[in-house]
Length: 512
Image (cartoon, rainbow, N blue to C red):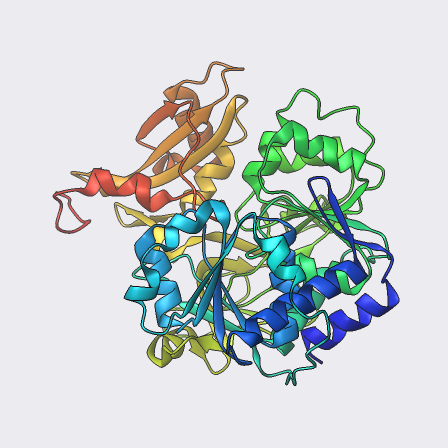
């Protein structure tokens, strides 16, 4: 099966149902299929061919849905760019994927200045400004009926680039459909007319939910910015059934004084993913929204890997601590924990999480060396340190490159962050290693406070010492009111916070 064929089926059977909503614009499945065909024909008329790569720089909009459909209809490979990235990163992503065209929202048009001259393969910069609608209407609405093979490339997404330049992650039609199926496998069934809210861009993480909702006859509600009160209003007013939030968004919504006492009866599923969630935030969200919380884990390279719903998440299970886990292996996923020699460790021992899914990447785009490092006998090495318990719960201890080695002890920042986040008044927290003359490095905690409670350095150190032991407590604590820096997908940039403390130090070891 391929994406285009299944999308056409939904456009036939749900033609008059609402398909995409953005601001005050509402379009049916028939409308969106027509717009998608018009955009596909426009791209093909420019000389683009199936399999060609086309970049896109956008926020959520009707036009972003146009390209989601149009690229699939023309069998053109989407290459999403991150709106928060700098010019050099856009050049890299478009250049190494040999994009022949790029679509850009009007307010990002200047970001593409001079790109045609600098990138030898780039021929077209299509600006979606006030002329876009008239231009689209001039294109043929007929289905171009391009051949699509399930193993044709569908999209190339990029990793976050924590080390070096981001790598392109290629997905076929087959793999993308499998990933969407697995995301929704444990969710309450999607029924025609169900509404899915996208706060994050569908060009990236939230896009994994766009297609499953579309294929089931649901409506994709697109937001182009996040405001907690507005988001809460829309959940109620649009009778939202499904939503995807990173923990920081969910936490911000829960702090809004209007979050309680609303009618959330239409909610079926709130997916929490892309970063760890604090215990206090999870319990509070359950109290406000009900038993609709699902937590999933995966990476751009392999997803989804694990999932759990409210009955697993908030259960009391002997031998497990579900509230601290990131789910259980999905029925169509395999998970193992490996040591540094790529050998599976005994159940319960920590090591690197490796996984196999039907929805994993084909490989890094035109980078066989990097692919060989990350994919071993079909297993994708995640770089995350975790463990599996005897009941099947998966726990993420940390990123391997975030581990703090203090006096010979391994300390995972996430352990401390989960504990510190339980203190009333702490909105966000990041823990990272800073130099220490005797121990080599030591944990430092940077806390964002909301002003509702007095929180002191002693409070932070004491709660860590009580729950985790003396050797894991932070030696330094700092406070601020401004939010912590985050990646385009909402993950806290620990590295950005850590690096200033290591300036002028050749290596991260010291001692007596």
